[in-house]
Image 1 (cartoon, rainbow, N blue to C red):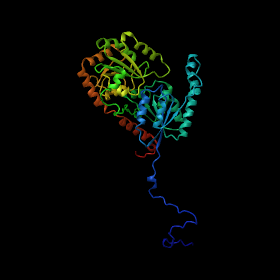
Image 2 (cartoon, helix red, strand yellow; image 1 turned 120 degrees about the vertical axis):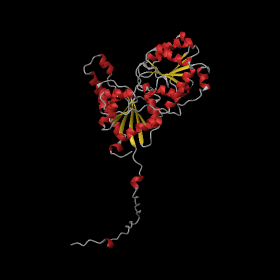
Image 3 (cartoon, rainbow, N blue to C red; image 1 turned 90 degrees about the horizontal axis):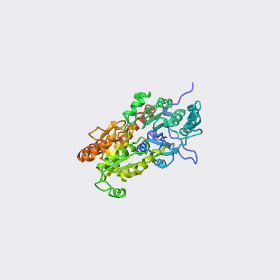
Image 4 (cartoon, rainbow, N blue to C red; image 1 turned 60 degrees about the vertical axis):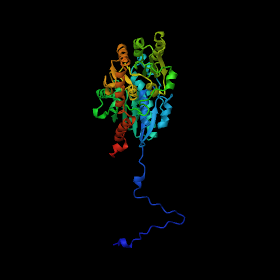
Length: 430
């Protein structure tokens, strides 16, 4: 029987290194705790029609994203200002495959047009997303905007075996493809109760919906004195009323309704200025051209101004008397009315969609029926006729808007992402 050496007889001295070899450096017992945890790599996918409110909101959130997340940003468009997203993470342009024109297929009534479109266009784009997700070691896919524009990215996530979150900043039509995207989500982040109600109606489980209202950079959007230089640039006198509508020149943002209301407003306040801030995006430019033509009507006396896309929106709102939201379709949220509130301005908004979550009619803003030019004109004149009432609305609006910070918004989103990312799936407490 072999005799086992006792502990006392063992040589416990450290082994001597061979000639020329460096002694191994012992690793501290707590080395695992010293290593920085791997950052959660998130693919932020944005495939909307243009650089509107959904992308602006995404950009603001990415600027506040904690260091625990590694953002990879994929956009379907690469025109300015999309490339500036590079400063917020690794940005890539994901060019869509358009082998066949889907509109041509529908016009010619080609049998199985939707299937052909999916096979010829959607599937190759989805495969490109899947390959890129794997190449970039993505942990979680975040879809910005609505389900339909993000179908290829959602399919790419499915092919890569990755969980998907939809930040639903838009409404979703009842289509088979949208229901497929929603049915494969790990979670959704609707921006309003109206969007949440629609998602649930389309079959998404209520416990997969967490409403997270939009947030603002309250340092940029806070009450301030109007800029004399900007007044001079725009030719606006210190006592001249200013009604401002900020929004893309698309056919549901309500610029046409304001133009319909303009004669009634200008009859009583001929020195008023009506400012339209925003530019056209998407393929259809006809509405923008129509608005520009109508603004030149001599009957309006040059008081309607199209300023195009501006990078000084807070300053423009600061010199405004009234900030107007006039969308003619339910707005998923509508951040421009909240920007006006944060700047301490009297706000008028359509009484459907996102504004209903924020504005209390007659207390911190006015709600009006959409598509009603007479009602819009009456609301504007009510505020201009009664400056004390307008000031009281504006003061209460500024107080309410403080609850909608981009920091609070980002933290609410991150809480969901933590639960779905690798740490959450392993049950590691955040």
